[in-house]
Length: 545
Image (cartoon, rainbow, N blue to C red; front, side, top):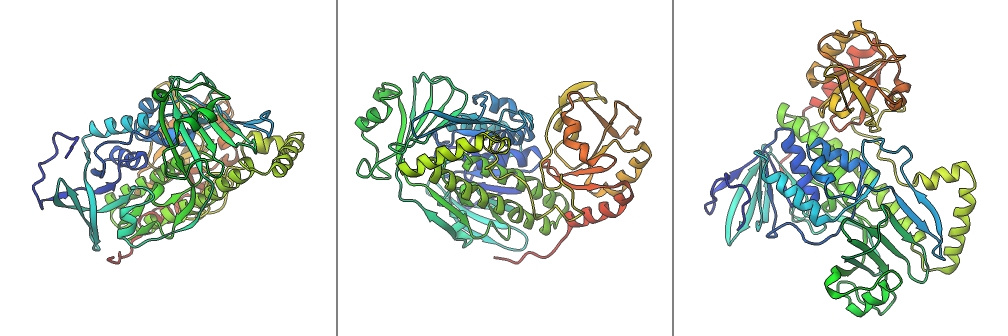
C-alpha cells in the first residue's frame, strides 16, 4: 500500500485513524476540496482506491472561476504551469465555416483567463504534490472504503488496504469518488436523470500541430466533432460515432482513428495517448447531504461534456462547501450553514446539466435540416447587438449566481448572490499592486464603498462574530483615514469601481467564497450584522443516520 506522507503513523490492522474531514476519492475535485480545507487549517485525510492518480486525460478545460478557487488554496502558480491560457470557444456551421467565437464578456474579470485547456493527469499530479507537502493532509492510495456509519458526533468509515481493515473517525466525510460513488451508496442516496444512446469517441493525441488557444465545436451533421488543443502538441478530438462503428465501452480500432483524424492530421499508434468510446449522462443525486456526509463532483452530478463544465461544476462544489465545513468545525453547530451547500449548489448544477444537454442537441445534431435552421438562426441573431452579445459572450451558460441559502436573507440588491470580480487594485496598506482577493483575504470581508470613516467602528462591532477583514474602497479620487484596522483598496483601471458602483455609500458583506451575501446601508449595519452572525452560527441537532 502506498502512503505519501512519510510522517503519517503506521497503520496496524484495526487501528483507528483520526481526522477532522475524510475525503473519499483523490480525483481533481476531491484533492481540490482537501487543498481548500487544509489551507483553512483543517486536518484532512484523503483515501483513494486506486494505486495512483489517474493517467487518463478526462477533463480538458478549467474556467477562470476554478483558477480563482485554486488561488484560495495557494496553488494558482502550480496550476497555471499546466494550462493553456485560453480565449474561449469557436463554433463552426454545417459546412465547417466559422459561425462565431464565444469569449468572456469582461476579460479577466475574475483575475484569470476565461477557458483554459489542460491535461487532467498533469493537474492531478500538481494537486497530489501539493497535498503531499502540506502538513495538514495525509493522502492514502490503494485504500478502499467498505462501510460508513454516523452518530450525532462523528462519522466512522471502514477502509480496506492490502487485505487489512482500518477504521477512520472524522467529523465529516466528503464523497468525491465519482459516478459510482461508494459514499453515495453507503448513505442510501440515488441519482436520477437520463442517459443518452449516442456513442462518442474521445482521442487524446500527441505530436499535434494545432496551436489555437480555444476549443472548436464543429456542427457538421455528417460527423459532429470537437477539437481542443493543449500544451506541448497534445490535442483532444471527440467524434460522434455512426451506428455500427464501435460500441460504447470498447476500445476503438486504430483504423477508425486514422479515418476520423485524416482531415486534420496523420497519426501513429504511439501518438495516441488515450482512445475510448462512451455514452454520456445527465444525472443528479437526489440529495447532496445526509448527516455528516456530503457529495461533491461526479458523486453528486454528471453531465454531457459539450459545455466543458463537469470538472468546473465539481470545483464550485468544493469551493462552496470547504469554508462552511471550516466554520462548523471552528465554532460548532452551523447546521443551517451546512444545509445551504445543497440549497445553493444543486439548482445551478441542474441548470448546467440542462444547458449541456441543449448544447449537445443543437450544436451536435445529425439532422441536416436542424443544422441548417440552427446556422440561419444564429446568423440572424448575430446581426443584432443583443444576439451578438448572447452568443459571443456565451450568455447561454447558466450564471454562477446564488438564489437560495445564505443570500437574500438580508435584503435584495443586484450584487447579492453574485461572485464579486477580482480586478487589480493598489493596496495602500503595503503599497503593492495586487488582485482584490489578496486584500480581502479568503475569510469574511466587509467592503465599504466610499463610506464615511466614522462608521467603521460600528461595522467592526456588528460583524465581530465573523472576524471579517475590513476594506475601504475610496471613490471620486479621494483617500480618507478609516483607522489602523481598515485596509484600503484603490481602483487603478476603473474595474473595481465598475464592480461596486451600485453599492455606493453602502457596505458589501463578502463571503469566504467571494460571493456577495448582503449590501447594507450604514443605518442598518448593527441589525444586519446580528442577523448574519446568527444565521451562520445557527445550531440544531444532527439526526444519526
